[in-house]
Image 1: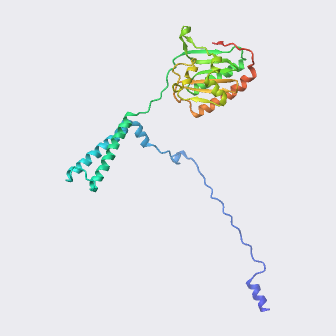
Image 2: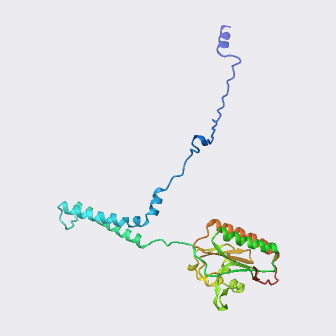
Image 3: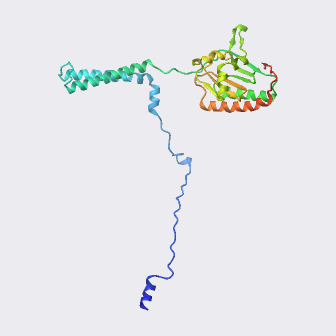
Length: 292
């Protein structure tokens, strides 16, 4: 009986339940108080080294020459003052160190000369060497004409586009902006020969791949001769396929002037124009004339 009482005292029949404490994440309040100094978050680091280098390009390019020249003079001066024989001795550690230092000094001098002789070519916008033209097929509905003009105004305002040519279903339905000059016709703007263009390698390459082709530096491509309707100094060209029936040729006035965003945007515009033109353009020949 005493054992039962003792067991009852040691182990209670109904032990009290323990409370479970749940940890709540501390709440953080952030407020922007302009009266207390404004925003105090992380600030962008100023690339002062890159800024200094860009402002002192000539000094930076000639710096290896000065470093190499000073190192060369220091080695010769040390050789003279230390009293070592002027003839290099392979068994002497000092001679081997001097030869290594001389080699590094000469390397610095040659590197500086290379930096001064090779400079990046400055890329700037050029004025198109051509005539302004505005040719639109009059057989198109007004809504399609408005969309074509919207595409031209958007590209010319937001990108380096200065010429836009659209060929669809074998017909040039739009030629706007600057065009090449045809001196054989008395100095008039060159009219796009759609049949000749579609037989060229540029059009066939784009039609075969079905994707956009970006000629970032037109002067380096031999296919430039297939685009006589563009100004002679056109710097960059984007060939955007319009489905499997057409192509949009966008000419720019700056080498590598079309950014990655511009290329993606032109692709979307090409898809929109393809969907619009496919509904209205049929096999009936369209005439192209100037529209004021």
